[in-house]
Image (cartoon, rainbow, N blue to C red; front, side, top):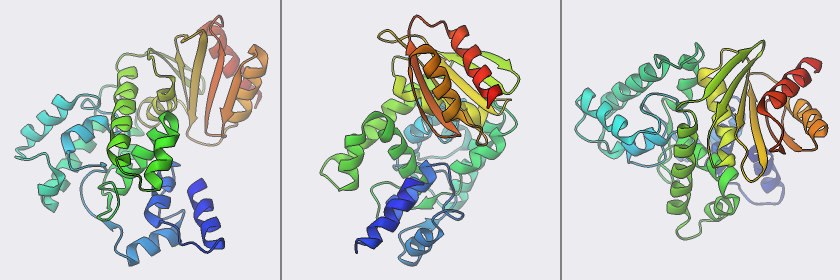
Length: 305
């Protein structure tokens, strides 16, 4: 993850990095603090900056709103604050403030979220494993956000929607935390809305979701959620209707499979733009390119790789 490299560079320059911010970057990159950036985790734990506890990974104490917006899960309550509040009522939890819940209730809530996610009508088998990223979070009592996972969720949204706010947040600028939460909630709500009723198609190795959204920045988040919770194939491909004369797509894969090379090939074919890594990529072409033609080109490029 880039945050691990940045932390190492910071030390070389004689400045101790913020281990909590760096660890949030590790999670945002899809890695786990225990396997990547272990020295950062050790430093944060020894300084009592993080502590593992029961519950769910959210950025604030407002659990109902945060659960509804979390992009660590894809469940019936995703994108629906009322449904999240109903979950608390069904569990007999009197408060939806994380600060007022004890360990037993947090465990009960985490179990309910896990079950709701794994048994959702749209859930693929891997959803039961993917939801674990949202459970038993590291509490971050001195950080701007309540948990490390919540921190990572926010910075992921900022990276796609408002990088300038991310920089302000890192420097501790006044008002940056509340602005970051607003950006995250808008991003997450749009991502979950796009997943409400996609048109799907299953091909050999690729699961396609045609979605409708007026926010192209959420497509990467939608592709990741589809890969982790819905896709029966190793690659999730999300395609959107043209916006401002451009058709956009995002891909996410369970293992490195040359998504960056495949999308670069397709972009060259259609005179578009592409970028990404072997496991995540984005693609933009002219709006005149039919979605079927784009999907076929992506599949062919993946087969060639």
